[in-house]
Image 1 (cartoon, helix red, strand yellow):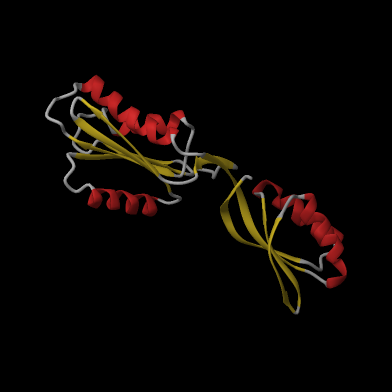
Image 2 (cartoon, rainbow, N blue to C red):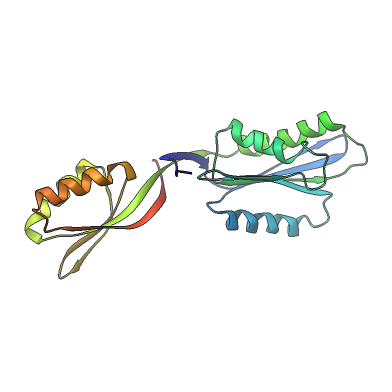
Length: 210
């Protein structure tokens, strides 16, 4: 699956608690950018709430990884409802864990599903959303006489300069949107008569849109 050109996620982690017929629900959400990071966060919450009745969760990681679990609750009442809340806010690159301490009164499938959804919705509604854009990291090596030309095209394609250096020739590490790479390279090659070297260093770097 192709990595999205942009995505919306949460800026920080937070917690949201409420009680329903004696049961306490603790919703926790945190940003993450990989399945390994999501699993680490999940394991931390399981350790923190080791005595809880259930630690249900859902996470969504670009480009298209989605997992969820009812953790012993009736099928379809917890994990998918947490995921529904994530999808309501159109978020990605995050995990939501909802912990339940059973209070002695069974809620029934309908009320239970609503409680898990409300837990996830409540915590996500309390966190600022941010928009992230996808960039690729590139490196250009050029003759000093072409400095003005190089900077012209860096500005033209709204590149983000990360580092200036010198390796027999001047070098610039920068970020550029993937869709602009081919045109950028073509413009550089043509304008510097093939004397500049442009190389791709890393893909799928997410940068917050200010």
